[in-house]
Amino acid sequence: MRRVMAYVFVGVTAAAQVGRADDSIVPVGTGPRPSAAPPCCPPLTPYPSQLPPWVAPGTPPSATDPMTGMPRPDPAAPNPAAPGQRDPFAQATEAGGQAARTFNENFAGDFPGIFFNRTVVTGFTTVPTVLGVSQQVVGFTQQVTTVPGPIGATGQPGAPTTVITNVPVVVNTPVVGQTRVPVQQVVRIPLAGRYNGVSVVENGNPRPIDQAYVGYNFYSNVGAALNPATGGSDLQRQTAGFEKTVLGGDASVGIRLPYVQQYGPVGLGSQQVGDLTVLFKYAMWNNRTTGDAVTAGFAVTAPTGGGTAILPDGSRAPHSWLFQPWGGFVTTFDRAYVQGITNLIAPSDGRDPTVLGNSLGVGYWLYRAPTDRLLTGITPIAEVHVWTPLTHRSPTDAVFLQDQVNVTSGAHFRFNRAVLSTAVAVPVAGPRAWSVEGIAYLSYWF
Image 1 (spheres, rainbow, N blue to C red):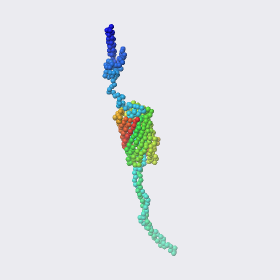
Image 2: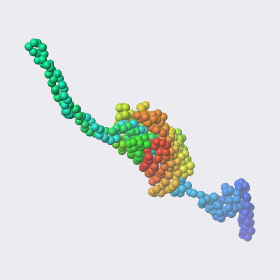
Image 3: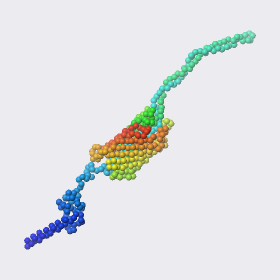
Image 4: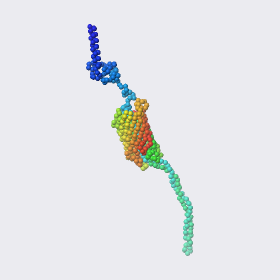
């Protein structure tokens, strides 16, 4: 009896093995297995005929994990979770701060202000002046006079008598002295603190961002081409500003205050706190993934700065409120970006000019290392700024601005959250409003 039971056990086991072998030759991807349920885990060493049904037909065994049967990851493909593998152009966080820092840098800017005709003292000279008169006798002239003779006893006059008189000749000689008088001339130069540092492209960005910054601008020979007799003046400006995003990063508000020093011509050197500007911007389209944005904004400059001047006609120079609507865009191309801003500066006083500005800038991320502890990026830039006065275009006006086309080139150096921006701007349309401009800004993006 024991021998019969052993034969039965061996036969049942062989039949089960045959059934399993028949089941294993079902082609991959033809559907569920007809009879037996799938095992709780795949074999340790799967062959092509034993791959799970979720693996595509023809997949080599080496492309699957022997433990799970799942496709192996491509070792050549970058790991998006690995440090340094995330593309900074695709980073976006709350309030738009990080997205703004990784997509594009700020404009550099180049607007030195409008020009005023002013009467200045360019020197002194001496001129002869009559102080009085000195009388001198230079000779005598004889004057002959005939006098009738005395009356005689008969009542008849006697013989006449001739009288000769010497009359002095007197000459009036003027007394001349030298008097020192000033030499005056009308020059065309900016007025420190007016229309200075008010343009939205001054360290501006079309995108709403979180930043605080300080900057320095230096303009050499401002107005030299307009004043060949007296030359121009050097002008330098320090600027402090702040911008904070609101509405989830789609808008921002900011303030800006310049401090301006002007050197020459003679008698016109001054230093003034400029006018305070309040800025608002809103991104009508703000793609946090690609970095593209279309924005609009408005800036108001209040006449808070100091300084004044008397124009050649005797009137006081205007000091306007400035209203500045603008629109802008930014678009990115992998490591490059293009951005532009069009702005209109309209004064409250009609004696000041209305100015239209168009600015276009390009940048390229020459070096980019977001995980570096020190230098994380270098971005060379090139910009073109066109300024077109819509009113008061003639230098004969008391206040005016001529057409300008200015080219700016430089680079941004990124240090994690800080950016050091350096650039040089040169006018290319004559008469040149200034010779060359040096720009340096330090921004902290938070």
